[in-house]
Image (cartoon, rainbow, N blue to C red; front, side):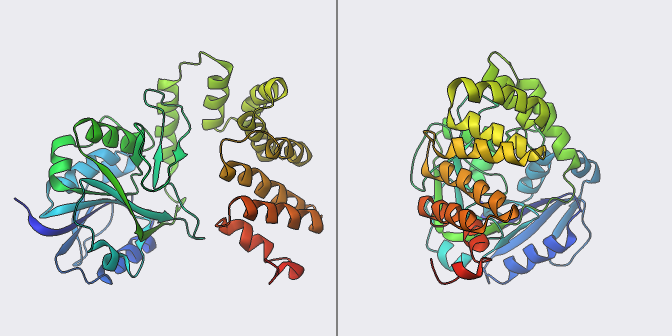
Length: 343
């Protein structure tokens, strides 16, 4: 039996020491009665943490091996799997201390602007190239999972399941763990009153990108035009993806095809074409209000850059009507003097 307490299990490639410092300080500020901070990867000796140096694993994006090494040496009965660019809200522990019944859980995850950031979602099982979709807190789905930047679990859950060490970062490592945990009879929960921020720091992601491309190439069956287009988009081959999505969008007019075609054109610098197809997406049958809001946000951003202020404001207001908590749209709208105080 492990002692009651929390083992914070952090993996790091050593590229973001300032973020590591912010993470450590945010943990210390919680004043948790019993805890430890375990760091695995490429960092430095620090009296506040228990450091295991595994530079080769860090440099090859071997996130599952590092997570398992941390969890195996945890002293406490609850472990939290963390990336090094996460911070805890000041009242995180005040909320979490009330929750003591869970196997595997997440919290409300935000990006630096305060938008919800991929904390609890679903993906089609058996389809590695499927697009994840956010779930409402409390909603259940066979494909549900919790993102690997923050995963909280009982130590016994980790011991029974463990991370698949054949997987590197961006190779469905978190999806695989959660699905196998559910298949083993463990439950997933999300405590939305407790908040963490994922800063999505871009430093040190070169090897992660290689691992992602490797996973896509290995799992792409390319049986349909849609799958081929999705593969090219994931690989960021925007020119080739645009050709595929242009055909699909023209033939079917579906939201995803129009939106993805517009996105590729925007990445390629074809702004007028992007604007035209974002507008087609905004009027198509979208899978959710949030997806339509995404199209309107792009429209507003492009129009603002083109100097079409009135139309840009209207598009951003439409974004907020569909998704009131769209922080980026609210911030952009507030850059228009006439819009301040008018929402």
